[in-house]
Length: 107
Image (cartoon, rainbow, N blue to C red; front, side, top):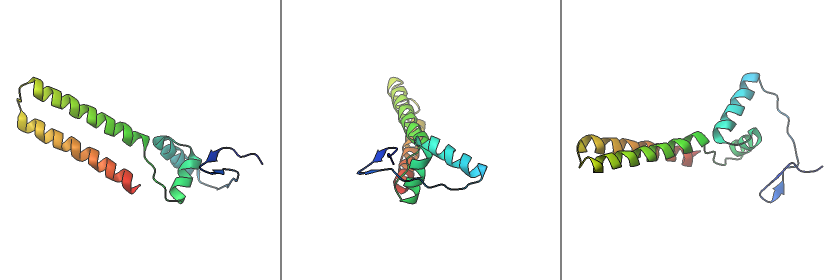
């Protein structure tokens, strides 16, 4: 039998059929889409304990960093007006980025 693809050193040449409810299948597909991978890759990673990093989280981290950069620019261009509010917001952005990153490491 010809392998579908190769992951690491070994070809993926075996197939497992699993019966699911329609809702379970939809949830698997949605989770795989969020992670930017196939359902097969998602199932392999979950079963074998490998990390899954959701594509949506990566996009969120980038956006939070971008917003932090814009806030920093606003702060410097306004000669430090609203310094306390700016600092509090930057700390909140940093905490959100760290929380998402921690979730990835647990994944």
